[in-house]
Length: 64
Image (tube, rainbow, N blue to C red):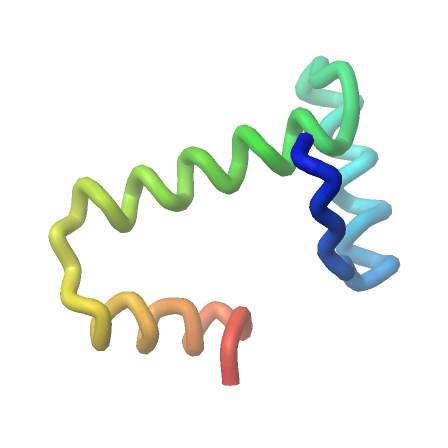
């Protein structure tokens, strides 16, 4: 990593740790990195407009 830190809800972090271990990732950081890469790739491949992306992220609860 580049020394960056982000805040993650405690319950979400526990879930991420659980599924990272179940999926065989070496760490929760590796798991989160992979998940973020996949999600970003979906946006990049979809050709969605910035407004469509904002609405989708809002619907998922990532932004208000």
